[in-house]
Amino acid sequence: MEAVGNGPKIGIDGPTNPMVTPLLTDLYQFTMAYAYWKAGKNNERAVFDLYFRRNPFGGEYTVFAGLEECIKLIANFRFTEDEIAFIQESLPSSCEVGFFDYLRGLDCSDVEIHAISEGFVVFPKIPLMRVEGPVAVVQLLETPLLTLINYASLVATNAARHRFVAGKSKLLLEFGLRRAQGPDGGISASKYCYMGGFDATSNVAAGKLFGIPLRGTHSHAFVSSFMSLDEITERSLQSCDGSNVCEDFVSSVQTWLSKLKLSYLLGGIFGETNQSELAAFISYALAFPKNFLALVDTYDVMRSGIPNFCAVALALNDLGYKAIGIRLDSGDLAYLSCESRKFFQAIEKEFVVPDFGKTGITASNDLNEETLDALNKQGHEVDAFGIGTHLVTCYAQPALGVVFKLVEINNQPRIKLSEDVSKVSIPCKKRCYRLYGKEGYPLVDIMTGENEPPPKLGERILCRHPFNESKRAFVVPKRVEELLKCFWPGRSGKDREELPSIKLIRERCIEQLNQMRPDHMRRLNPTPYKVSVSAKLYDFIHFLWLNEAPVGELL
Ligand SMILES: Nc1ncnc2c1ncn2[C@@H]1O[C@H](COP(=O)(O)OP(=O)(O)OP(=O)(O)O)[C@@H](O)[C@H]1O
Ligand SMILES: O=P(O)(O)OC[C@H]1O[C@H](OP(=O)(O)OP(=O)(O)O)[C@H](O)[C@@H]1O
Ligand SMILES: O=C(O)c1cccnc1
Ligand SMILES: [Mg+2]
Image (cartoon, rainbow, N blue to C red; front, top):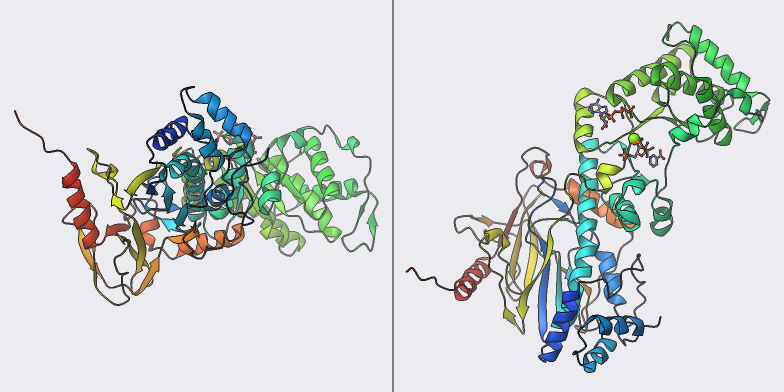
């Protein structure tokens, strides 16, 4: 369906999910747009801030994600005739047709978006995005922008937290597609978990869409689908360098299994292993001799899976192939990984197979931050974690409360009051800065009015808690970073920030997390990062608050 608006086409593709259209919004945005239009207010210039009030997962930081998809929506925001017809059907018949002509010409060419760069570490109350433009259009954008940012930032933060507990050296694989909240949940999870620091995904569509590295093993069904070694008819395998062919790879594996059984170091750990499991492993090795990895917990890890895997890996080794490793998917993962490692090391020693002791161990099965932490405390030998359900469903906290609040209209600052101080909005079109201390850590984020001079290097600036009078501190910044950059200039003539690749955003995110002071990052009782306002903005907030709040009368 052809779009009918006439905004600038600047070659930005549409959102990844084709369901992200101007209709992906709440009905009340259209009813308000109509009422603005009817009142002749639709082109009044409004400024909205998009921000959250509390960091998720009991932590003190959040990773900002989802910006690129927002810009893709903005760049392509136009109604099709079909969509306009549906809106007309859905609104009361009393709505004047002029409104639908107005929608016909609508796009975001007069909207200006400033945002924090995707992948940045962000904190409560600071606008992640400032959206300025004709009030009716910006109002229509509220819901899609929130839906594009909320889950993206939540799951990227969840991924970053899992990375933090697992440690930098571990390989983290996102296995969540089957458990995600539908196809968009699955694709978004793969994208934003990679951004938050995961290494790869099992989700093939996400690999194609975003270039995320793909990884995977095999399932229990593959193992249990085999009944016996007789099923393997094609038994030959060429050596890795192509110089010779092993005519009966099955026999070679069986010979190794007998050697292992008689081994002094492995002394009687196992007797007869499960032969159908062995058939599955051999078949997988014949299919992928260079990438052999086996799921070893279908029958019995130490009595069957590990010896069977080792026999196949050693037969592959004779032909110059190096097996990748095993996956453990049940039982005590700390204990089983340590026992498996001992087994591999004993083989390296007894049969003089260099590096066999370092064979990779992947673990999966309902992993989350807590189980990773428990495994660390107990000591484990896992090299890679496959994490699904808890990661992608954000089991520990299902939503990040990102909100979109009006802060100015027609150059008039607006405030939203609440009994709950944490819900009072911070008025005015603002600028935001991150101030760094002498040790290189970010010390505080500060919001100022749009026209205040920026904080200066080496000059003392008073940073005030926005609502608590007694909380304030002087800061002499060693570095000042302006946080809100222009990602969609509208008609302002400003330069537009480029949208970096997902890989660059991931690197930026890792760098951002690394530069935080460790006490903000720890899992137990982390120190809150300070978010403040300038003295001038503080005074103005409280002036406006008093101005807007009615004075009660005691009777
Ligand atoms: N050493 C460990 N310390 C703490 N938690 C662990 C440890 N090893 C595994 N876990 C976790 O314990 C849970 C065990 O899951 P569950 O009770 O389903 O047992 P299982 O081993 O999966 O059994 P099944 O054979 O039925 O699949 C998983 O969430 C797993 O991540
Ligand atoms: O546990 P998660 O973190 O979600 O990771 C993904 C899980 O998906 C697979 O299990 P499968 O679907 O075969 O079911 P299972 O739970 O019976 O192992 C895999 O073996 C993992 O256990
Ligand atoms: O490749 C795997 O091992 C995998 C993929 C998805 C879910 N569970 C496991
Ligand atoms: Mg499982």
